[in-house]
Image (cartoon, rainbow, N blue to C red; front, side):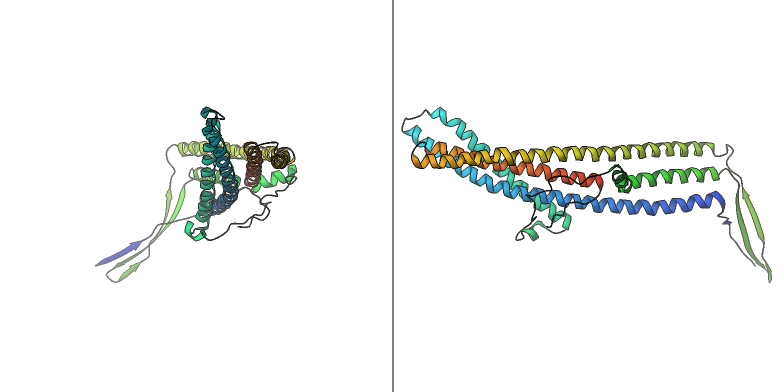
Amino acid sequence: MVAWGGANLPLDIGGRRGARLARADLGILTARQDLAEVVWADRVALHRGLIDAMAGAEQARLGETIVALRDRQLAVLEQRARAGEIASLDLYPYRAARAAAARALSDARARAQGGRAAVAGVLGVPVSALADQTLTWPDFAAPSPTPPAISPAERARAIAARADVLRAIAAYDQAEADLRGQVAQRMPALSLGPGYTWERGLVKLPFALNLSLPSWDGNRAAIVAAETHRAQAGAALETTLAAAQAAIEAAQTERTAAAAALARVRSEELPATTRAATQAQVQFKLGAIGEVDRTAAQIAAAEAQLAQIDALVRLRSADLALEDALRRRWMDPKP
């Protein structure tokens, strides 16, 4: 009776071992950056949902006011048309405006509901769980007038800390490690072959040193493929860096424009329509104008408030885009 056993233990030394360890370390780093990117994406989605919920609720409130004013205005005009004071065709623009206001109200309600659904999705709870909850953002209507100053050094640090940039760097390092591993394959591989043999009471412990030669072409094809992959990873890294830089610049530009638009609405359009509505109310009490003109002035004032909400949403979205580009928080909503 004969019993035997053996093993083949490759010697994990040199370039092969270094490349393998580098790939493992880079895999862990990539996984961490992927997790960071997922967490950041959830934060951005939460803020976007809050913006939609807050803005949609305020737009719905103003929309209900405008629809009620349109109904009141249209009722007066219809009464005048029945009395023969105006032609029925003159009512069409007012009816169209009322229909547009109703559509805007429906859109605002859907926006508010969609924002709450987005918040619930990020929090991992059903929308019904937020049904009785009030989402608050105390300073939503008072954004910072100017964005934080970003020096070239701070911008470079922000870009270098972005998860997508770090992931691209890790991908390039991974490609470099793969290339080193393929180059190491050009060298012969050594392995130890200890064994065990038992035959008729005799125990033998054979030992072998195995030498595996590389492929006949010196692993050139695999090396060329690894070099191509490294070049592609380098190009992807350059593209990611350029995209990060462009995103920051675009967000800063949009933030400046959005702040100017909000300031213009608040300093010009909103005060002018408010004064006109107040003056129309006084003239109506004096009998200088009728209900239709007074209601038209009130509608204009409410629509100016809607324009303010739109400008505010644009500014808050620009703030969020700038945060997303920098991967750094500087506004602090509190749901």
